[in-house]
Image 1 (cartoon, rainbow, N blue to C red):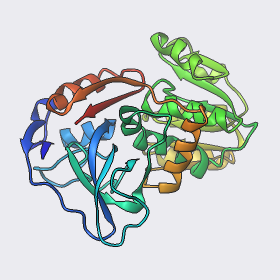
Image 2: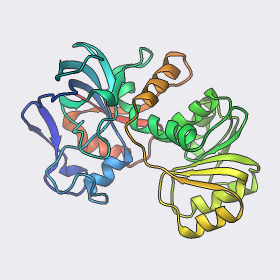
Image 3: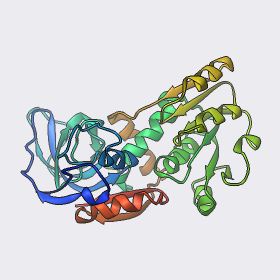
Image 4: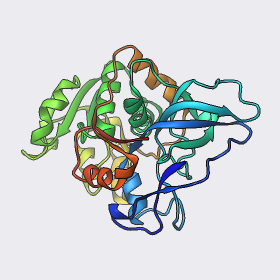
Length: 308
């Protein structure tokens, strides 16, 4: 099979195409012929050596996949050959999604939603599960709550806005000037240009904040949360911020996404009910994985994907 490998950490140019042996599914696994593999910021961080999730190179990046079942390992009864599936297997261990074939645990994938094509489905899992788990599992989102979603036009953010609206929330979104119209198109009730003034001067009585940016953004977000509110951060939160939150009766959740078949099924239901759409800014063939990583670094609207 063709696969994108890297033999050293570094910039996008370390990603090269190579031939590798076809994987064989073990008991409880399925072999998926990958049609699309989503690219996420964590991919670039691992590629560059900022996160050592996969140890030392060589390795094959990628966790998001969508494709068709090619073969079944022993004991797998949930799927049949030819099924269209998607998922985020093995995260944060190596899933080797940037390849034509991937052997993955059957209980970490689900049937692809009919309302999404292969590229959209391949771009969905990690960002979609992050948004779902952040809002619902960690944030305890309820209908009627006021939710603030930062970076609302990004990979996680644009899905989080739609998920929150589908669950009956009042959504306030922040975005850069050139992405405001896109954020509005997602259904956000209010959209704030984060370059014009302090969002904390414009927002009050928030029940839940989804914070994917980092730095002092988490601490700043405490100002808009009501007592009993929840701050869900995708990045580390300082002890000082946690102390301030505790004193104000605010719960802080630092989350990391995990494989979640039930979450995938929920995302698929939303797509098939026309309540969730995955925006793919651009897709690239496997041979252009380096260019795809460079494009993602420009912070496009929505997601970026590879096609095999």
